[in-house]
Length: 278
Ligand code: MN
Image (cartoon, rainbow, N blue to C red; front, top):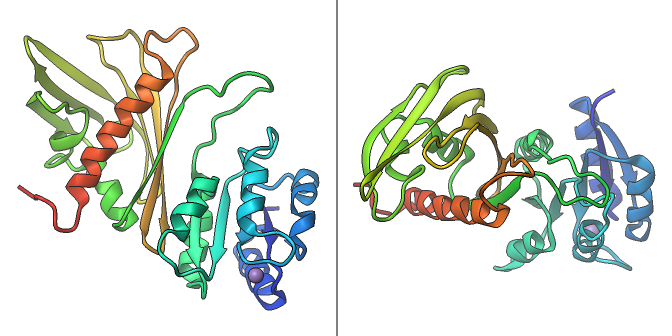
């Protein structure tokens, strides 16, 4: 049997459409018609993904997303919101509530299945009860296709323009061998220091998954592992980055998250449709 997907949807026709579509792609789909049952059913079914309608009687999908994300057991299950809302800001509200994906109705069958696949492929840090999650996670939406975001990470011509760069640094060298087992080296001069960021590609699954190791010998011993998942949606794509971090790491989780946020800002500026391409 395939991965398990809980489908919460009050409209009978949509519920059947989503479940048939998922089953045709060899997923195990479990329908839930009444939103009030969703949390209990999620606990019983232990899904790998939840497809969530937003407009429902009795309880809105938005409230359910908040409840699920507040639940210690269920919070790690990715949620794909499906909604007919068109108003500006709704997607943002849904994402703020904690949904990892967003597809608007009427759905495109291809987009729907692509989004499901991408969310299931996204890494989920293993959480142990009572312990903080290992690793650092940062998510960002980009108004460009998943392929465009993916390529920015591995294109030897442009990766060095933003990746591992700092505002006052100067690029010394950028070499990227974008094959599994291939290495990358990005060297930036920061004042008197030359800072090398390097590692090996472990997975290159365009456009939804990229995994590489990361070492910065000047600042830390050893290697971290970075997993990137990119899910296409109606307005572009959402990237989720997870970096491993041992408990005794010299750099704090917040600092790592801040570092990646800054780099993703740089990437966003680079991918801006009317941005500076020089
Ligand atoms: Mn509905």
